[in-house]
Length: 293
Image (cartoon, rainbow, N blue to C red; front, side, top):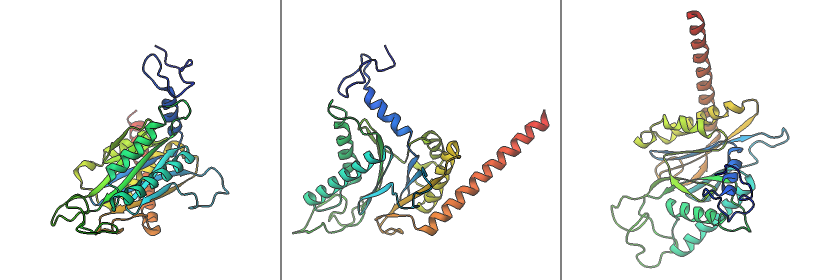
């Protein structure tokens, strides 16, 4: 079986003899050329962070946003072709708005991931379109409060997140990643882009499944991981963009917001100190090996 397209990559709707869709694989390669993006699911919220490579000295800092709000309680980030990512943001907003119109409440995290994933997957089926050259990370907080639905008439829903069941415990953080094929999974920590391997290795060290990491700690760790992933491209300047979503009792009151400037600066200082500490350890280790020789 061939490992190159040889004609089977000319259309999006044709499989190769060994069952591969080369157009989708090429789209994944486009993602690998994008800046590193990560999401961390914490005990009381979710953190999103992205490495924005500065391609020109004329770019205005902070003006070219890569993290977007989908709904009051939802954020989205992408890596790969920026225009494709912006199109998916628009589509996700339409889905969230449609859910509010039909069900009078915010869309659950899993439902938004399903709808965005289904939309992306549809672009792998027809020869008249191409796959999206982005991988997106969706982060949200499904409300745990017994809140009234939008424009409620009557008693409202009897159960489910934000419903009327007294004392019911529901909701919580949600983190999903949608790939160019339309495949999506729920994650404790997700990474995509050029430095995804380094970022993934660092995320695995945090033991996120235990639920011990707080939102404030997650912001610092996210900054540190982005700086670590940038080491392979440290000859290029970059800008760190971060956002977070907390519980109703946390700093954002269940809303998706940018990380405040002072907290972002503190996280960046923490990341820089951590990187300097790693460099010092490497230098000391190298000196010890030289002495032994």
